[in-house]
Image 1 (cartoon, one colour):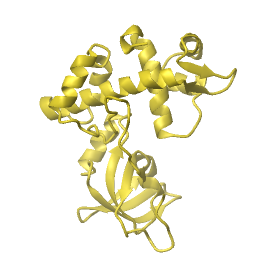
Image 2: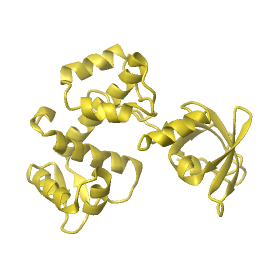
Image 3: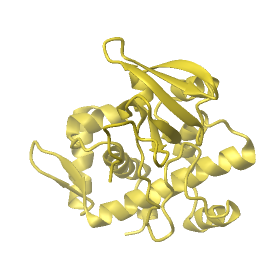
Image 4: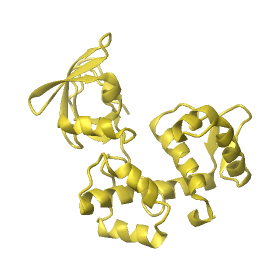
Length: 234
């Protein structure tokens, strides 16, 4: 089944399920999917039934939803389209990283595979989009990214921003205003669990980040900078 044989709505469902599983280990359910796409549970249930009948999803009764191998191929193809379009908009049309997600949501359904591959060549085969999300290659493989959430880092950690959630444009504008972009180095000073904040330094400036904001930032630890008593993740 080619991507063009699916409706835009079906493509969206598959992509949302895939990206939800990319960010969390929580199971995808009808209610969770309904919250993601903004449709009623009954509408989502009907869509899931249709995609299951097409062999793109599996859905245990009252249980979690999962992509089949065919569904994964379709979803990854859409992720590739979306992230390459975002990259093109930033690099060639001077969009901000907070502006590209919704634009790409519309464009990804209209472009052909030929255009997607041409964008990839023109951009020099990028491995990540403007938010640090890995871009699938033409064969559907991904570059590895051993990142962890900034909110999970212990005081004393020195890390580099590798990825930022693009779910909330306002959050992206807020982080950009603080100088928190991709590849910026951050030192974690302290965590105030009861206050819900993380104190960090960026470029010599001390910042207080709310834990929800810190949870949206994924980082790579600088080798040899793990705080005493901690071990680097495998």
